[in-house]
Image 1: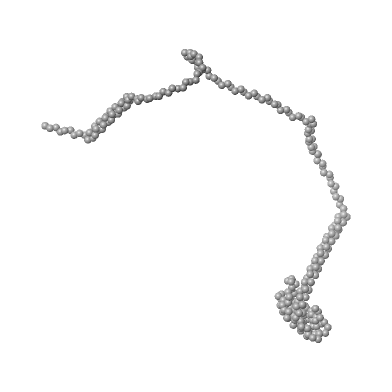
Image 2: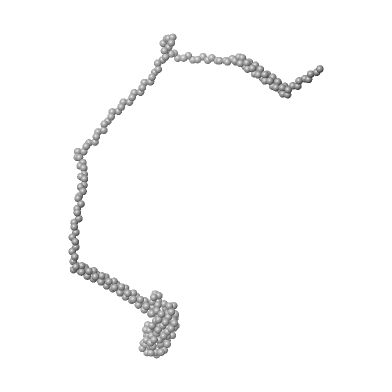
Length: 252
């Protein structure tokens, strides 16, 4: 009768091998560790050198069995500096002459205002002052009137001079164009009324007074038309639309 052989469990063999290896490592560690500690130390060579002789020392007192400890030497404290003598400051000498205190100003008692006398009513004086003021006003008005008249006269004189100069320039231009006819006797005067534009252009020529010489009147009228446009004034306010011009054959 045969029995079946037991089958080894899987992994058992590997566990046994691992346990044997661990025991071998432990035995080897213990062996080498004990051997390292039991190894004798190596010899050390020391070379002795002879020292120089020391200088002679004073003989020390015989040593007792037990020498007492040497006392501690405390350093001497430095001497304290002597305090300097105090010099007392002398008080300044008092002035021989004592300064007198300034007397306090005494407030003066307010002086009551003096009663002013009431002005007495004087009708004669008031009338005199009124007449005087009226006379002064009259003088001022008269002076202003004289100044205004003087200025007006000066302005009128200046205007007349400017107007005369303006007319003289017109007459001069016309006389330059007059051709005197023969046979004129004396110095007859011809008066013409001339109407013009602001530009000096002549609109009409009218004989208002004959010179008594028809040929001369015709020559003057022809010269007036020939002189258009007439000279214009330097000041615009001197312009006149209608002009009265007189001409004489012997006038310059």
